[in-house]
Image (cartoon, rainbow, N blue to C red; front, side, top):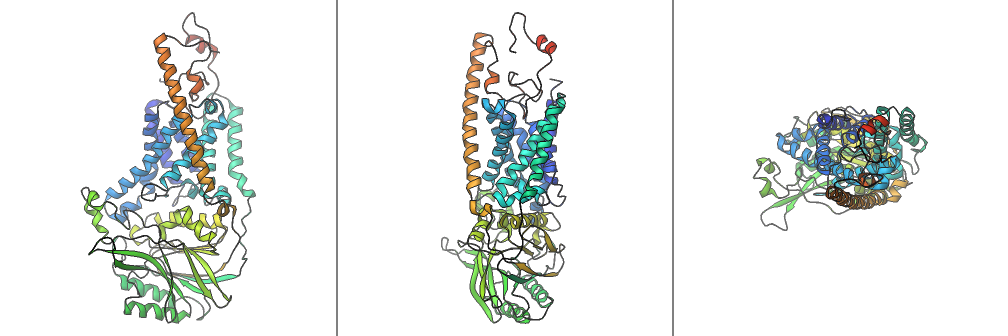
Length: 581
């Protein structure tokens, strides 16, 4: 075993290095090629033909990825239990991928063909991404590989199939790099070079995808206000009146004469106190709207009695369109409240482990309407449909897509990042907003209470942005677009196709595994192997050491390497047996 590649005792370190590499591909570092390196390292670590061990290796890689990637959760809660629990849950999904890959690569045609291994491993990864993005509690899509590629050529493929296609391509490139590494170890320089060239073609190919950004239905002149908060951290929004006043002051500081803007955008929870029920806050908001002679789309919280539990209250996270003179009935209610962040499922159960559950004093309920807010624009003689996704909703494919297919000509992502301090959460979110701009060909405004806020063109370029924990204002004439991308038209079909293919592959892998175990038991009973290829070669994946499909099944990998030298093969045979070659 001393000559195994990589050595068994380094497997977990290799997996952890793969996970850490994945994290560096995302903001704040944004070293996007490291996403390919991270996948390659993980696949090289997943070399042994054991599904339980594959789960362990995948989980270690997942911890290496998610513990640093989700560090902001520790900042938000103020104690590590939430951060660790979330990271472990997400890492378990990577463990599921590892175990699944060990099973699927036992399928004979996957074991025999390098292209099949590359494609199936990509399908499995994306299927697991889709699973953790939708389950449990509605899922958590943070760390989807596609969001690491906003500065890479691959992001242009977002307009063809969204996160599904881009994540697939990332894993394909990583698998090709792993293939090249195996070939290099066995001195198959030509095969390694071919894999590297193909990986480069996959990365560069999306440059051919056009990203139109010109206006098709006029422009929307917007002002975005980042009002800032009095303190940094979890208590940042406790002084709700001061926060609302900050945003009102920022609105009055917007450049240009009154009436030059079509709408002013405030972030999520810019006024935690509902101006529709509080006269002082209403006066503050209305004075700001009159000062710029434009409606304000502002974030607030609406509290109502819980219809299911007497004596309790619930709240709704809403965006309200406020015109000079008072509120309108145009609102959007957040559809996907964050579990453990905005509402506490199974509160009594989780209180046994931590009192942090009671930091959420009033649970947030979900809205049911599509994220579309019509903003009247007299200059255009019509109402402009503005798509809205509040805070973490930007990470959910279907919520943003539904707004676009319902007619949104521009997208707004109001968010409140105050509780995350000086972590990378806000820049990770901005990367998602940039991805959505390219995916749907829409200008996007991310507006935060504390930053990072940004204005993004339909091709994903950041036209203006702010710093964390500063008061700032931005203005821009956003191009209004009505053409829907292929990604929007396809809807959820790419993801559904991947899930079906992955399920069928996993089923076939289980069948191949059962057959392999039956043949192994039969060989043990008869005390020898069949003539010709050992049974392992029929269902087992090939060996990263390069022994081909007929190798023992103890160490499986992504690629098939060169055959063993004849002298080693002869040394490994018992006297009187025929060569399997």
